[in-house]
Amino acid sequence: MKRGTQISDYLQPLQPNQTQCYLTNTLQVADIIEWVLSQVGKSTIWQTSFSISEEFLRRLYFIEKSGNVDTIHLLLDFKATQKTLRLWSFLAQVIKHTYLADNHSKVILIKGESLDVAIITSQNLTRGNRHESSIVTTEPKVFEVLHTEIQDLIKNHAVPLSELFQQRVQN
Image (tube, rainbow, N blue to C red; front, side, top):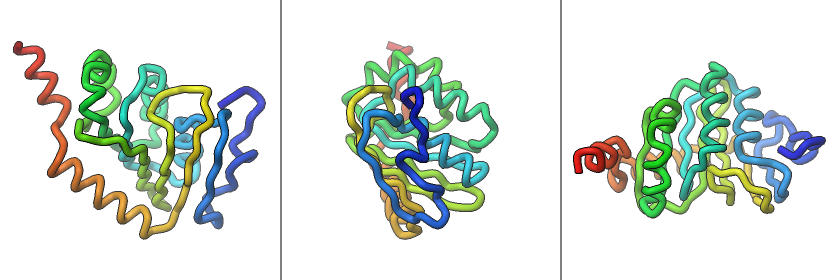
């Protein structure tokens, strides 16, 4: 988040605001994740993205260490495998379940103690200064549909990154 910017400049509390959106170059998706976690309690997170950066992974490390996250599931694209493997040692310490598939979606699902939240965004799990858009919703049907589709993608179309890493180490 850019200095001097407040999330409240763009988003209101999740309750009672069921669906909200923004288009800006001042917010980062990690800021939104922290903001959601502050409102919903301990959570399980599913994230899909084309790729992830080391800078974003550092933010996830501190988010995970905050105690607000039970488990993080991550789904990235096969085309970003080389970049992802370079981050493997750090990635494995932060995220226990990482998968690769043909994926270009950018979705974050946060299943909280008090509320489930879906974030559909244009931003990869990277840090940038480009204008990005997101929709943040607590609409149960949206969460349910996306959760079902992500579970199907992981179960039927993805490869656990740990398997690819083992193959690379053995070769």
